[in-house]
Length: 441
Image (cartoon, rainbow, N blue to C red):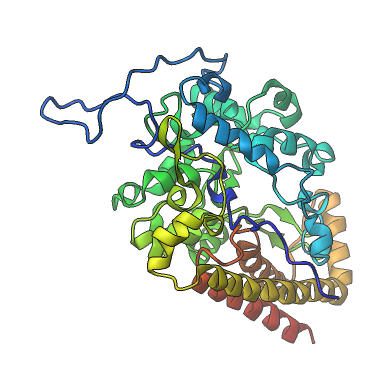
């Protein structure tokens, strides 16, 4: 049966920067001159100084408090409300039936819906079955509210060990200005300190990526929860280590797993949303090499009553006709068709490979049913055993196939951000799946 094309990239990864309230410094009026050197002059006339509004108990100035000083940015920020949970979101467990097998034993098998606008971040994490049906730690609140970010920054990693349900009711500000500006709208700031460290400084990697991408990337990345501290962490340091191969090697080196698969006991990894790594990691995309940031594509400059400003209604560049005409079309003859072709190819392979992974998972469970049952009994008795070499090899192939597949499926552009890496990663997923199926025949 032909499946409906998933719509998580209907705005072509508007969500890549929908985390970030990225105001271009020149376009975000009014702003103050922050040059410290007496012989330096600002590139633009200095606007009047804006007094910082009052903060909440976490030290966060809420978005609403900036609406008088930045009315255009605030209004476009509110326009994101149209991307609501009621706007026709996919249930991925229905769209991809194989996920019910692939994620079995993990919270994502309880509920997995297409993301809404980041204005609904708190509501979504409160209401997902992944937190209502399963006890979680506070790390699940990471990137859902600036108040949690500020709390971690002030009190340290111990916050991550708190229970999710003990904390989630304390917060009332969804993703907003503080996340990318802290409390100074004239600057871009990495408030998620774990990602700042992960960017790396040895090769000046933190200087090679525009801040308009870093502030988006601080949440649109692949992360895991540290086994000891439970702190939100990244499986790399530096751009060269931000590739699917290097990330999987990192997890393998630490014997890291998110869960044991319920049917096969394979030690599985659940990839998150590696948009930043897909664009800026490893060899990087041509767009990254040309110096483009997420905000360049997903946030347009708009002429309003108060002058030019950066829109905070995050949309696909394919919906911005001015951007297509004045920028994209200088390199792309027909970007809309090009993206459509990339995404159709990715979608077809994502579907077909998911069926293979579902098949191999069921066949592992069937072929090694007695051994798996014994291992489960030993674990329940508190004397965990070790799988045979044959079962361990099959489990490793299952882990690898699903990791590479997941890396593509959860990256929100459906291949448009980096078509070459997308296809290469799917090749590795399919190769592992085929090898496993051949060994189980």
